[in-house]
Amino acid sequence: MPHELWSRRIAVRYADGHLSTTPLQADDAVALEVPLHELRMVRLAPTDDGQLALLLFFRSPDQLAGGTATHYHPVPIHLDPELETQARELVRVIEGDLLTARRVQRSRPDHTPPPGPIRADVTAAADRIRSDDTVIRQIGALHHFARSDEYVLDVAPATYAGTAGLLAVTTLRLLFVSAGMCHEFPVSAIERTDATTTSGSEVKITVTAGPDVELEFTGTERDDLARLTRSVHLACEMEHVDGSVVPSRPTSADLFGQWQSLVERHELGMLSDDPFQHHATGILSAMPSQN
Image (tube, rainbow, N blue to C red; front, top):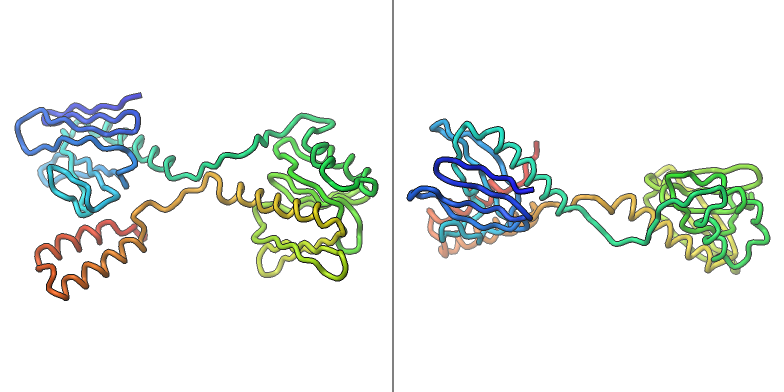
C-alpha cells in the first residue's frame, strides 16, 4: 500500500518500489523520483532548527539531486516535526524493502515435505540408487526417521565406522541408518563435503564440521555417492545461502578503492582542496558503521 507524508513544504510518497517527493512551495525543496534499487539506506534525523529531515543515501556517487551529483552525501527531505510517527513508519517500510531486495532468492525445486507413512521423497530417492537389495530395511526405516519438516534429497548405500547402512541427506540433516539405529548430523554444522576415490573402486565421503569434527563414509557405488555429495552441497547452500543478505553496495572495499583514487588525484594536483574535502567527506560518511 502507498505511504504518504504531507508536510507544509513537501509531499513524500512511497509505493511500488519508488520514492517520490513533490515540493509544495517555491523554495529549495527537491523534486525526486527514486527507484528503490538506487537507494542505499534512509534515516530520520532532527535538524538544528527543530524540524525533521528524512535523509536519503544513494548507492552511486553520481546520483543527481537538484541537478548536482550527491557524491555519497545524504539528500535531506525536510519534514514538519508532527510527522515524526508517520516518518518513522515510512523509514521502517523502506528499510524493510531494501533488506528484502538484498536477500538471496534462488529458484529451487519444490522441497515441500510429503506426508507419510510411505513418503514419496524417500521412494524417489531409493529409486535412483543402483541397487537397493542391501538396504531395503534401512529404506523402510527412513520412511519413519524422516521428519515432517524436512525433505529427503538423496540416499546411497555406505559404511560408517565398519557398519554397513544407508547414508541419506535431507534439507536439514545428514542421516546414517543402520540396523535399528539412525545417526543424525545437522546440515547447518557442515562446512565442507568431499568425495574421493580410494583403493580400487571404493569411494570415500568426508564431511567436515570444524577443526575437530570429521565424518568418513565409504561405499562402492560411485554414481550414487557422487549424486549424494552434490545433494549435500545443495542442502548446505539452501541452509547457508538462501535468504541470506548480501552486503549493501557500495561495500567497504568499493569505498576504499574510491578513496585511494581520490587521494591519488589530489596528490597529483588533479583535484583542488575544496572538491577533495567534499568528495572525501561523502566517502567517509558512506563507510559502514562498525557499531
